[in-house]
Image (tube, rainbow, N blue to C red; front, top):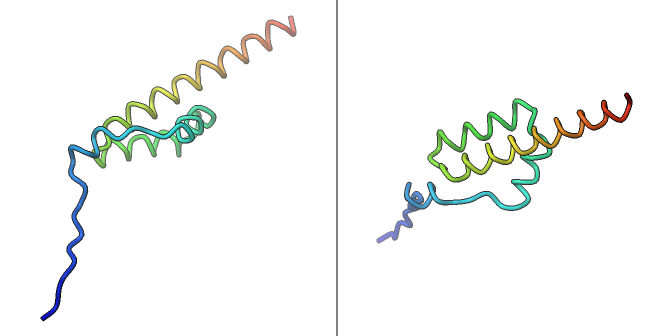
Length: 79
């Protein structure tokens, strides 16, 4: 007689409400221009992590705004 331990897949409902950690949000903000970041966000969406997808996109757009403002201020400072 053998006992089988069955691994249960996390339910889709739990996946859809999981949020990114603060470290992940910071990394998505810092590395917002790369293909890897956008691809990882798309993987979250494909795997059913809806909240992680939303958080990742928000962090990447925030990063783009921060970089844009920084570049604009740098150019204005040079002029």
